[in-house]
Amino acid sequence: MVARRARQGVFGLFFLSGLVVGVWAAGLPSLNDRLDLGPAKLGTALLLISLGALVSMLIAGPVVDRWTSRRVCWFAGPLSALALLAPALAPSYGLLAVAAVVFGIGIGVVEVAINAHSVEVERVYGRPIISAFHGTWSLGGAAAGLITSLVLQLGASGQALLVATALIVPFLYLPAVMRLLPPVPSPSPSPDTAAPGKAVGLRWGLIALLGLAAFAGHLSEGAAIDWAALHARWILGTDPAAAPLAYTIFAVAMTTVRLLGDPIRARLGSVLTIQLAGVLATCGYVLVLCAPLFAGAASLVVAWSGWALAGVGLATVVPVIFSAVGAAGGPVGKALSLVTAFGYSGLLIGPAVLGFVAEASSLPVALVIPAVLAAVVALAGSPSIRALTTRPTPDPVPAHD
Image (cartoon, rainbow, N blue to C red; front, top):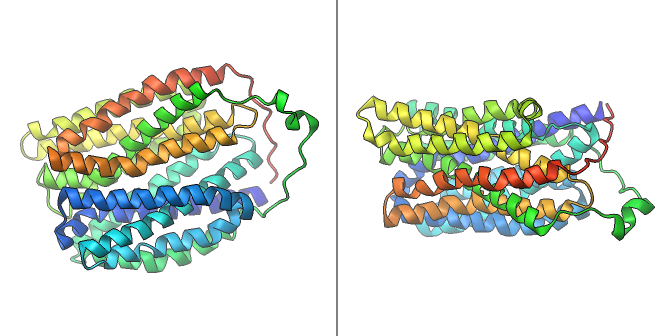
């Protein structure tokens, strides 16, 4: 019963985290119009969010180890949503830059905390369930895109939606964190696990390949999160109310596949799954890049098809990589933290870099980068995961319901 309640709580945490990030992403066109930013200033704001998040992630790891992930989730969740007020109310670009750092810090802490607790819950269950958590995060992002589009169609402002989200979501976090696993003392290490000579760690070559695949997958995902709506608005000329649907379609596709990710991986195997992920994501970005070649509504249909295909491909990348590291056996905590850092650096820094490339050339040229990196997912991920699948896996921990 405790494990089931905790699983429900983690589902809630991932959904709300995805909702907050999704409202921010879907509201970028409105924020750009309100402050007249342009690609360079918008890219700088995204970069500042990234820097704030990465710094807070480095700090949040030791804090989680010291205070437990449950305790960090208690304050990290509500504060991360409340931090959305800063960019929402920023009256100028200068204050937006400061607000971006504050918002990024909130994102970084909550992502470390909820992912750490998801690993703990999966350990209690003794079977793969992390993919569904990430699917719920995507579901939150899809809901945010739909809500944003509806609010704009009703004539309300994007700024009002950001403020409402910042004020309401912190209270929604409370029922979720109340259901998390209670903190338990760390078990004493057995002679087998404590003996350094018997520890089976991952080689640096495997860590580097997994990190590269995670970086490529996260950057390609982040490009869709922050630039899909802007691509529809700037390149395809869609109206402001319809532009967020490009991100929504991506998020819905990713959500659907992530919710089915564990059965898919069980049927196809991790190696074939990540190979297909890279191929499908690359094809999706090619469609997006080709969309302006079509006239009228056809260009929008092609772009939407591309974002959907990219979402299908990228959906299983993170769960497959994280599960592979966790199932490798031995003391994999350090390897997992390094791969996670690689991945989130791609998710957070990549979209900002695309902004600078778009300013120097064009947004379609910038989107060539995630198209290429989507192929890297398969090229780097498959050999590393193939090597990991040849290792003996540890016995699962039985679930306690």
